[in-house]
Image (cartoon, rainbow, N blue to C red):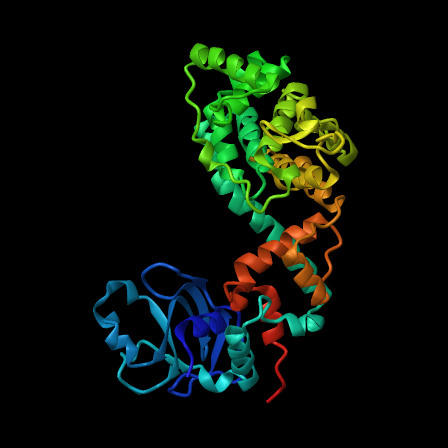
Length: 429
């Protein structure tokens, strides 16, 4: 016994022995094209092409566990099923009950037992990577091709959300980069409040003050809600005064300060430090989008961020008013942070810009940027490495993250090229 999802995957990816297929009436059957999987209402596969005897048929294919399910689901009364050219079942429990015009194929005898055994093992595995112990059997060409596709999937999923943001900016790529860069500066923990902060201050306002770092800091810290307290130190006190003037001038409303998260963060990643660094980036690279579009070399793009550092106050502070006792330390962006920004914002924005402007050069250069970066270091990548799949660069680590989060953890093995290749390694019996 199996389930319809498994059956549909067996059919879609031809995970059965194709030779000696016959209908329940004994007619020889050849599957030329299984059709396009339909994930909406109606037949399971559309526009399939099969040959029964010497007759070529083009139409839809429906799959069920039992042939009697055709009537249980009421397909005999549904006009959407009038173009069915084949009914594929696991068990023919109602032989001869369908109209003679609908041939039936019983699939179970043509599926090797090893396929079912491996599918059940993968489906029931408690491991984060269900096929982890079998990865050594995966052909390197399959691996490389699938990782390339996964990087594209990762970017495509982001682009759907980013395209919504781009529409909100009326097609202003500078604004999109500004929002995305801010979100990236929040990294995972404070990404949402950082995006909200950026959206609360029109880019044109920052443009008017981009040559005055102190005013940029006042705008950003004020809008973030960090300047609502009483301060004894001169720097935050002056920031608050400046912000009050700018807030009234531009009719700004600060966001609630409680949205920002500090717990479980290293002090160097506190949102106060990241906001100060973001202000420094806007100050020294206000025309960042033009530079990102113009530069294709990894060293040139890295140099845009290497000089970004929080102002002097933050050499001894992580929060307003809390002075450290240790010696001053520069709060510049580290190499890992720069690589993260290039990986998650610069390269994808370049890729999206190139795709929308039909520029193959931008697309290729975006991928090359990630191929020139060291792979990311996190718990998921460590798990892949323990299984023998060590990424060579950031492009591969990004692909492995996509594979883990959208296939492995969701047990989507049948929709994964790696899972399909392992299922095909059945013994010939």
